[in-house]
Image (tube, rainbow, N blue to C red; front, side):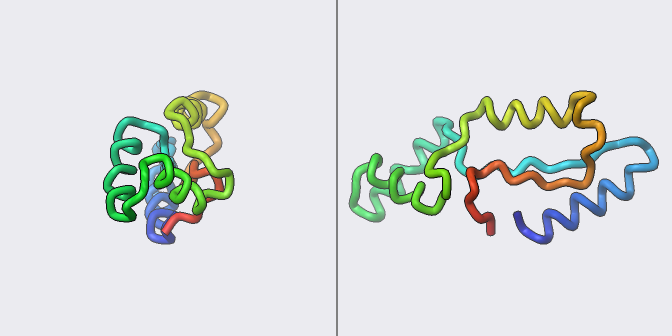
Length: 102
């Protein structure tokens, strides 16, 4: 997570708390979508390797070694907008399998 994102989310959450508006940010890393899969091809082409090798290379930067599934992102958002998440505000949540975000 960038420091700027965290500051923006906390600032906006603080500003809107009096109106009982919750502000959070979900910051996914690699998510296994068609767009992510398509994005691997230029990476593979640039390195002159296969798409499968490009995936393995990209996942070396991800401690858990995998992409998140779209449903994982959806479950986090579902939690945040449910009554169970009504105490979360001002949070920037990195859903990235342990990868460091710039």
